[in-house]
Image 1 (tube, rainbow, N blue to C red):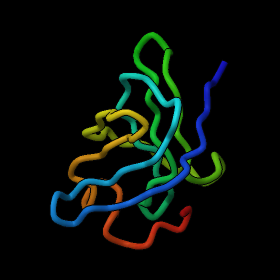
Image 2 (image 1 turned 30 degrees about the vertical axis):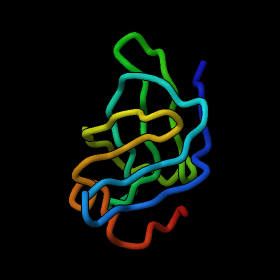
Image 3 (image 1 turned 120 degrees about the vertical axis):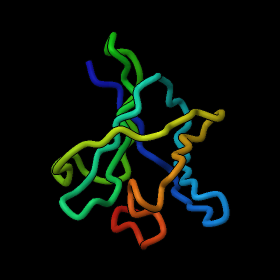
Length: 97
């Protein structure tokens, strides 16, 4: 069964080039970014090889057009993405926020 968490917020820190999704309850070891056709972040799949973990969504599943590996860490209720400007167009207005 898919464990989905709706992101409660999204922010980007230009100084550190990191994006943060507020996602209480999110857990996992996966690093797959779910992107739309234009390369904007729709969600992050934190499920590991064993299938355990959450899928954190900013937008609808129907908007996902592809995936990419991301540099993801979990910091409490935050999903932190390093190198976010290039990997998920984080410096631009995300249409799902």
